Length: 396
Image (cartoon, rainbow, N blue to C red; front, side, top):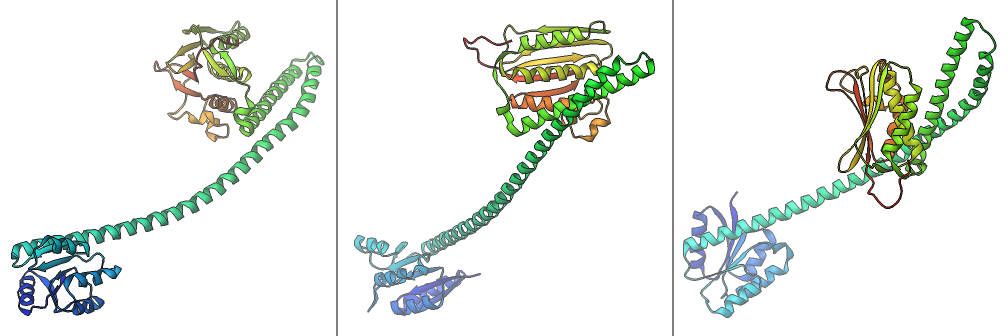
């Protein structure tokens, strides 16, 4: 599309020369012989640039330029003065009233064409930038509105999820309490039944009932702990400075005593002189016992080794065993007490591992399971951040 140029000059010969030059170079040209005529053109048409003579009767070029600039819609139209006046005062005044360039007569044709093309390109670039900024502002405004709506919906969804989570935790807590009450009566009755008969069949049934009730009581306790931790978070923990190695050694000693006479080689190794961490003693003990029991359930013979190691930022409690391997490539489901996959794999004490995971995460640590690279047994790793040593004595 041809660029439109308005040429303003009271000399018809000058108009003819300039108009012919511009037309030959693919410009659409309109002419005006006075300032008033130029203003009338601008009320009808938008031009890409204006070539404006200075010395005209009635309204000279400077006044015409001022009148053009009073209309804000003409702000972006470049006005180039084309005049015989060469004094510094005239040139300076031309820029003050709104001109963007100044060419003196007689002018060089190539120079005029070059300057004209440059100012039109600058005008178009400014318009593109303005349009782009307006588009960006609209996009930002639209995205901001959409984001506010999304955030509002997300907040409402999160509030509903928190409400459901509290309801779930309250339900688990209530159920756990309700289960434990009759369990106490059942446990007492079973204790009496154990001495009631000498018959092997009867003893076998009582033993089976006792094991089932014990498991139910254990799961009831674990469910109650999960509910409390989910409701109260780390507020439920009694954190204090603890020596992880000493705490683990105590748990391991009890574990070793309980498994005296088994076909297992049970050993404990600490590679750390001190292992201070911030921990809730009772809950970390529950984690260690749960992880040891997980290894014990699936290690009928061979070895179970607990090892304490460290990095620059954490202490690691590693339990290595010679038991069965984890099935499949994905073992994350072992952390989820409600995942149906847990009933399809050989290793399954998921609810206790789920509780252990919650406890460790509240301690800013993590638990990982992996198969031993030797192809035999597994490695369970408990990682807890180090505590910077102070003069306070660690509790073991």
